[in-house]
Amino acid sequence: ETGVTQTPRHLVMGMTNKKSLKCEQHLGHNAMYWYKQSAKKPLELMFVYNFKEQTENNSVPSRFSPECPNSSHLFLHLHTLQPEDSALYLCASSPSGLAAGELFFGEGSRLTVL
Amino acid sequence: GESVGLHLPTLSVQEGDNSIINCAYSNSASDYFIWYKQESGKGPQFIIDIRSNMDKRQGQRVTVLLNKTVKHLSLQIAATQPGDSAVYFCAEINYGQNFVFGPGTRLSVLP
Image 1: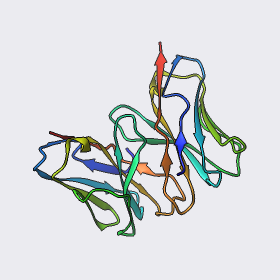
Image 2 (image 1 turned 90 degrees about the horizontal axis):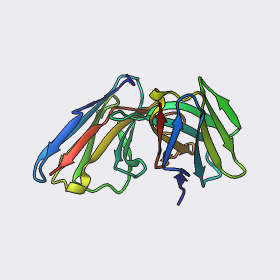
Image 3 (image 1 turned 30 degrees about the vertical axis):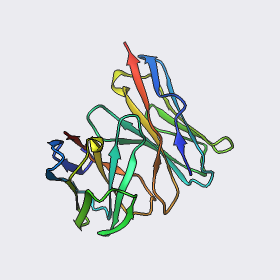
Image 4 (image 1 turned 45 degrees about the vertical axis):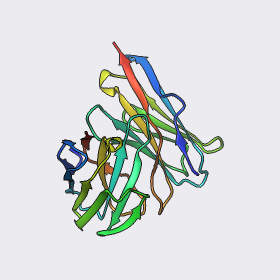
């Protein structure tokens, strides 16, 4: 138990569907992150939120839309995805967004786009 | 751009032997390094970290060595156990910037 909970753990969607991934952290952290993990690739940073403000968008296509209503919750809204978007999406949190300490990861949401 | 990489994509060791996983980094200004372990179906978990002003740090059965001269990081696992089977990532961090992760090394422990 890392204190970062992601739902759903598995998701299968068609290219025309709209779905959302949810992340919740119980650590009192101020920064939250979305990472994409594809086979044989390093973890790819997608978005960073620090004190609910987006501080990083790593050239992510607009079919991925993040939302951070408060410091404990982070969403990733998905629509019109492509099969190459199939991957493990990891949420993480840290005390602040200054990379001064470790990231705490959730278990991930395994996404399959048909 | 900056990069963090691993010398070996897979490593197989006998149970009870010591394991050494290596990582090369390219940014000599990096402040902080972390090793993560990712078991199948789980998210990465922190194992051990080291600051750039240190050469060595020990944890329970794990040791991280940092050689700034050649920009090399290693993770040593003593008396490797079946539960150590996982993918291991190194991460390179500059204060105020984002983490840069290596591609990972899969460690397989043979009975």
